Length: 270
Image 1 (tube, rainbow, N blue to C red):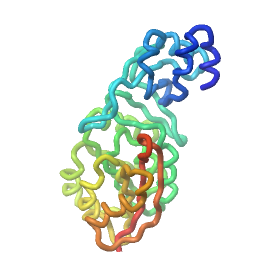
Image 2: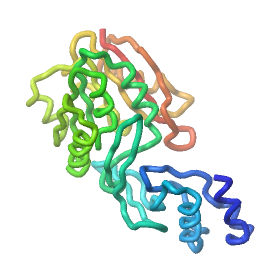
Image 3: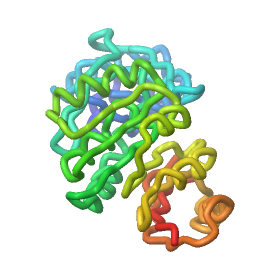
């Protein structure tokens, strides 16, 4: 973001210029600053307007005022420039997703990880996506699999998921609203592949996933781990629920905080 800094020379005092944020997440037409120094509050509108001026694809600039939290993994954001909207259309991996950045959980940083998982899916597979959100894993998976089932507990995320299924014409994808532990028994179905993109609490659902996995099936288990204890830390969690399994892949798929990363263990019970 050197161009943003350069464009603000003389507009933001020298001592504060060094604090200018160097990165942001772009979700559709919304630029979202995750870390915005409080010392720059007086200049936030100026900074936001300048970013819009520099990037024609950005029409809204916002600041994350509260980290992801709660049952639905939601965040609080505050608009500092441009259109006062929290709804946008995001494009990723050739797909289109409609969402509200405050009412749903979504991270553009894991787009390449979603593509990695999709590349492993075979045409005849039946796939389950737990904690499916607005549908980034499930809609992409539907382009490869025979059928995909997605379960999401957040009503707002489920509503957007249904829209995204239509937007992307994913006719082999069924989306369910509710807790996965109550939805799965009703489906009376087992799966070749189960994706568990809830690094904060996937372990709590591992036994459930194993129960509904077909023989020779594969689980993609997401977790948070300190770098120095990866992958042993996450593998130890799996061992609590599955005595015999084969690790297929161990992947670091993004930083969560200094020294802690989002990880995925792809494994196959034996």
